[in-house]
Image (tube, rainbow over all chains, first blue to last red; front, side):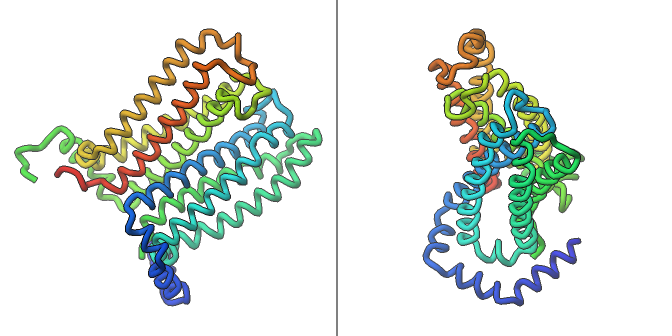
Length: 175
Length: 170
């Protein structure tokens, strides 16, 4: 595993990403973010708060699917309450994520865990869109949650957990 | 460091548990990851209740029900965060105890706890009178606003520790 990640980061350094990261590192905005001590921690705090609102909303929708929470509401009401929080959280996560990448381009872009995390985020967004459109519409219309829907709900939470693991491990990637 | 001036924190750090975590390549990051996932769950579920108390979301629904839906997850995640946090602390007890941001984080958590206890034992007594109100009494709104502020501080101070650990004292 360690070796695989190491070779992955070696390979990343040999691609166009490496000069791109170094050029980005030289830009004024990157320099500003990197030389202002609190810029990165503040972006991380906002990133974590957005994770809280987004993951909390995902959790409540999933618990509604399993009838473990929100049983005084219809699926449509649960959806109306929480879904937009997920998308707004994702927007904040994207903005702060881009900010943190611009602040430290080589640390993020020449990082094997970063390149495991980002495709997983895109995959999770696509799975969530599918889940939202196909499943929530059906439930909002009064259908019941079958095993497929329940499995999907668990899968989305596991994806978020995996993504958060990756996020923390970016700091520890073998480079 | 002078071995004669070994403090209680150094002894904890030097324990077999402390050194095992500190010397492992994967334990500290893994505990940190679980800590992040747990605290994100605490934040998310606490804010759901706070926003209801402020009258910003879920206003059609009773506060008691919103709290019942979220609190088991808040507490479960809090226990997980406390366990992983304690293990992280054991591995670098000396540095954490010398870090002002760590102390500030503990104070902010204590304040969040006191705010919650005051709300639970005093304000909550009359809950049946305003449980379903879209606009709740001022005391409820103040408790919710304080809760958000204290948890924001806990998050910020927690992240500040990571950037300053080992900088203060010796």
